[in-house]
Every structure is written in C-alpha cells, then in structure tokens.
Image (cartoon, rainbow over all chains, first blue to last red; front, top):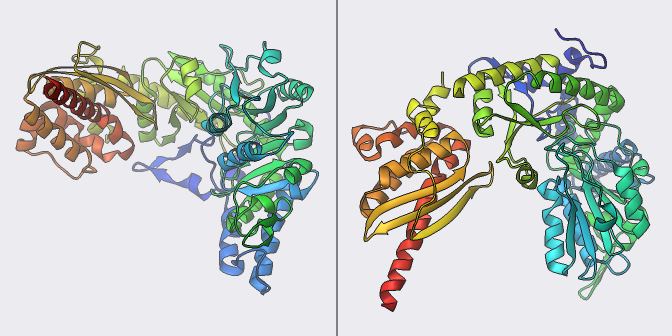
Length: 418
Length: 155
C-alpha cells in the first residue's frame, strides 16, 4: 500500500462512514471520488440527526415547552459552532440558508435593494471571475439585468489561474462588489485572496467569497480573509443537505435590507408596516432547516476532532500523488493547475477524444464514482475549448489506493473506446 | 458485462463513423442542448414536399448522443413525414421504457439500427443523450412545416 507523508489514518476514519463499505454493480467496491459534489456523512452526524428527530424535534424560537427550548438550544448551538469554525468575531454574523447558492443570492438581493452607499445601480459595476460556479454568476447577472449595473469579470490563464494582470481596469472606482470563488470546483485552483481584497478595499468595493470548496478542506478564517461576505454549504463538509451558511460583517448586516420576509425575521408587524429582528434572524424568514443546522454542527465537531490542518495536509499529499499518477495516463490532459501548489483536491481532466459522459459511465461500471459534465461552470469549459470534463475529487477518507483504482479504471476506459 | 448492453457494437460504429454529419442547406435549423452534461446539437431539416430530403447536423457530445444523431440521419432521410413521425414516436417509447421493452420483430422493422439503443433506456442519466437529436429533429420539422404553411398562406 502506498504510504505518503501527511496522510491521515484513513483505515480508522473510513470506519466512521458506513456508505464507504457499500458495494455497487454486483460486488464492486465503491470508490467514491465525487466529494466536490457532495461528501459522505459520518456515523457521528447520522446519530445526531437521529437523536434530534427521536428526542428534540420542535420548531425554534417559538414555544415555551421543553422540546421547543431544546430544539432552539441545539439550533443556536450549531450557530456557535459555525462561528467558531470560521473564526467569526460574532455569532450574530452567521446566517443559516439552505445552501451556498441561496447565500450568494441573498447577498446579491441585499445589495440590489440597499440604500447608499451599498446600492448597486446603473452607475455601478459588479466584478466576478470566469471560473465561478453558476451560483456565483447567475445571481449577479440577474442583479445586473434588474439594476442596469455592468457585470465584469477576470479571465483565466492557460494554466487555470485567474488573470489579474489588468486588475486595476477590472476593479475600478465604480465597482460596488467583487465576488469570487476561493477554491474552484472545476479547476481546483486556490485563488490569491489578498491581491483581490487589497484592490477592492482601495476602491471601497465589498468583497464576497464563495468558500464552498474551501470550508470542507482547509482552515477557514473569515477575519484573515478580510472579506465582507463568505458563503459555503453543509453537505460538502460531512453535513446534511439543505443547510448553507452566509457569514457577513455585522455592520453590513445591520445596514442592509432583508430579502425574504416572513415569520422569525420580524420585530413587530402591523397591517401597514413591519420592523425587523436584528441579524442574523432578519435574514432567516420562516422555519429554518433546524435538523440540518444541528447536523452541520455535528459535522463541524467531527471535522474538528480530526483537525482541519491535518485534513488539508492529507488532501495535499493525495493531490500530489494524483497529479503524478494521472500524468502516466496517455492522452490525459488536466484542466487546471497541473501541480499540487495552490490548488484543492478536485482534479478535472479530459481523456483524448473520449467524451466525459462515456468516461464516467465506464468508470461507474467499475464502482468508481466521478462527476462528468461542465460542473455548473460552463464558461470554464468554453474558455478551454472543451465540451465537458471528468472530475475526481478527494476528501479526508480518500486513499492512494483509490487513486490507483482510478488510473486503472481510465486504462480500461481507453481500451473500451480504443 | 452490463456495459455492453449500452455500448452495442452498432452504437460504437455509428459513433466512430457518423452518417450525414455536417451542416448542409435546410428549411429550418434548431440548436438543442442537454444542460446536465453539455451535449449540444445544431440540426437542419430539408423537405421536398412531405419527403425528408436531408437531415444535417453538427454537435458535440458523448458516444450515445452522437451515434443517435447518425442513426437518425440514416433512418429518416428519404422517408415520408408520417412514417418518420411513427419512427420517432416508437424510438421515444423505447427510450422511455426504463429497459422494460424488449424490442420484438415489429419494432425492429420500424427502428432498424435504432433498436440498439434499447439498453440505454436502463440508464436514466443517458436517455436524454439518446433523445437529443430526435427532439431537435421534431422541433426543426415543426418549424419547417410552420414556415411552409405560412408561405402557402401568403402565396
């Protein structure tokens, strides 16, 4: 078995994930390499979800009965865990949403309805990048269309990095918000936050960071990032689906208007008008995803018990191994950085003329789960002149043996279509 | 192996040596995409009265979507519209069968090479790939016939 420095004790960790023992297609061992799409759930999180529904289920912030108080304490306890996990200065800066897409849409809508100095309108500009997930493109296109603001973006270099050579022309005095991905879900690129934030601050623009592919894989410190908003999602970090997070700086959350109206987000309501609860509740209309938030809290406990530094080191070692092994596959072209430096553990590639759909199908037959398609980042495929990619993505339970299985599987794909 | 039921020799042959590929003159053109996987096709139909004189296409996509377009060209060019519609409907029925239809001789007579796609119907994620060109043809045909109707009315 391949031993690499920095690897976690995956034999022990994999025992926490019942699904990893599953067999597929008549006795094939599951090789799960689709972690950038969603991660698997450890027993510790499944148990907390069971216990929540078996013992504590109630609506939050409403009843005076035992269950309501327990459910509220668990839900708000999860907020504390998230705040600590991302080093937020205050727990009131953590807004629960249903996923990262909703978090990003929330920011776009706050700014669309805001008063000066935050208001995005026809005199102003919005900046994104060409490597964004559709969830960090479309909300801004909608905002630009509705307000008349101009949408601009950073292009990409041939080796899968942001082209910041014209940063002063892209981010200008007119820029109101710069929204970009910390780690690309398709290229794997880890972006240089500091350079972008520095320029944004120079012109007084707000900074929004999509950390969906970062929060699960590395220590995340929102204060160190110096961003104004940070979005991520629970199901990519061992938590359940249906729970996302938007962190925002407190003074902004106080100033910016709510987006969704309803129960929970109000202070008083009359037939003529309403006043709003303070953040974060101002942005959490209606019954929130309670069990899912509690599950995310349990996922954070689980990740902390392993250590985010160690998870980062593990994935870095795996990524180094993977790029080396993938280079041995004839006709394979990595789309994105070809070394493990400043990149995450999602690796996209093409395999000669074989369409990724066909690659994924033949890999699946061997029990290997990868993602194929444009990964909700179609502009990246257009940029590199390819219809789609195959993507393998790793997590704390992934092993070098699984990378070997992928490489063997790709050989089989080549033979099948050869 | 189960995969062989999807990737029949006939399908792989059409994929490697597609029939009628490339865009030629047509009465209507459509562009269809499969947003989940990025398969795309641009397809043109040419009618001579109610006879299909050409179906030309250009696109990118997986072996299933490309082979399906090739089979479509082979099957429909030269046919009367009514017969082509019957073939299209039979193919749709087969593809939506979730692997439950075992094509009989009658179906084979209608679909010819297209019966090879029966195995694909077991893979829900791939059914759209197989149907992409057929849906594009249906759409293009409706547009071409609308156009012909309009011309007759103004004439």
